[in-house]
Length: 343
Image (cartoon, rainbow, N blue to C red; front, side):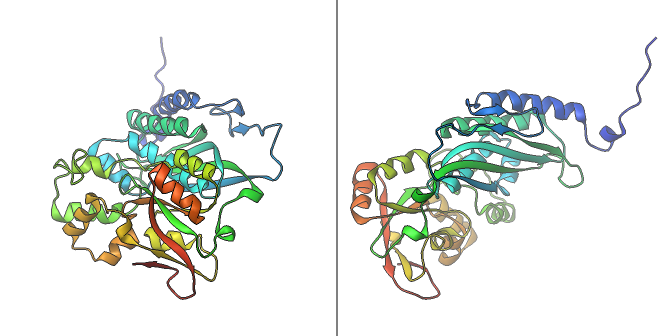
């Protein structure tokens, strides 16, 4: 005669260990598709172990970055589309690490939710695994947390942590930038992961139908808003081969003004010519719907530029002619409160 086990008080409180174990097992299967030979221990132990190469370059340094997807997850929940969110977090972190000149090594995630849905987590993890494979890095572990009372049922948050490696005397950044350098832009794939709190407020206030055709002709409005954050690893590798690359500015929250200023040394100003590219229709539609001022648009969104390369003039000309980049301005000598001027 069997003995009935009492119901778990923890499960009754909202945390189901069995459901969590099922979800983590599915993530582990996806993560395993990204594992590379340097990984000595991945998902399973309390911490991942990564072997440093025996032929470690002289002056090698580790580079790290962390970020979250932000409130774009709310849109993904509303539209039941989660794979792109996984791509978003990996690509955002890869791009941040790229700005130093580093190559990505491994990635970890933090997924927190009110109630674990194995299907949703598996879809997010599939996106992370696909993005890691494209970047040539491993998804080595992470944390999955079920926290009812902190997050609503159906809601989740996703953060990521990426480690890369570079050689110290080859690091990119303000120390290399000088007057006369040219600014070259790489196009964004949409909003990337910034400005969604404002967009969601407009959608709610104006009762906008996300199933309507998007202004860019790339599916519905909801699909255009959920387009994953674009990775720039392949393009940056090509640009570095041209030589003369001094700095990279990843255009995220704060727009071009705030992010480009982060790679400028004292005594320099970046002059950005906004006629150098066409702002994609999605941004102008958001501006029209919200009656947003031009300055607010430029300080909230990337406006179609996801990465700006600061380069020597000759190399910049080759990047434009050979790689399909577009010129967006130049660095000049100067001082003042505005480090980046839009003209």
